[in-house]
Image (tube, rainbow, N blue to C red; front, side, top):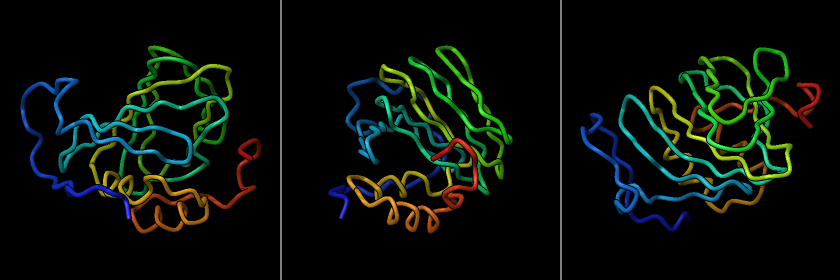
Amino acid sequence: MTGFDDEIVLGALPAGITHSDDAQWRRKWNVLGHTYWMKAASETSFAFETLDPPGTGVPPHVHPTQDEHIYVLGGVFTLYLDGQWEKAGPGDTVRMPKGLPHAYYNRGDENARALFWVSPAGRLAQLFDKLHDLTDPEEVVRVSAEHDVDFLPPGSVPGAD
C-alpha cells in the first residue's frame, strides 16, 4: 500500500506554470534512499526532481519503451552509459535512448540533485507509487519489471556492484 489516495491519470500535457506550492505537483516518493518529486505528468512525458544522498544509486536497467534524460542540478553522478562509466555534474544533460542499459550512482560526498524526464510517460509514475517506501530490493526489481523497467542481473556490468 502506497498511502496515495489520488490516482495519476495521464492525458494531454496541460499548458501553464507549475508553481512550487501547487499541491497537485507536490507528490513525493521515497525509493530506496532517494527522494523524488513529480514535476509534470502527461501521456507524452513524465518529469521528476530527485535528491540522491551519497552512496545511493539505481543499478543497471533498461527502459524498453522510453527515452530518458537527466539534467544535473547539483553534485556529481557516476553513470553507466553505452558500455562505459562516465561522470555528469551541474549543468550537464544526460541522454539515454530507449533500450540502452544505463545506471546512475552518487559516489561523491555531497547530495546530488537532478531533473529527470522520460518520454513517453509510460507507467513510471504508477511505478513510483508502488515503490514508495518499499525496502526490499528484490521486490523493487519484480515490481519494476511489471512497469516496463527491466533491471540487469547483478554482476552483469563491471563496477556496478
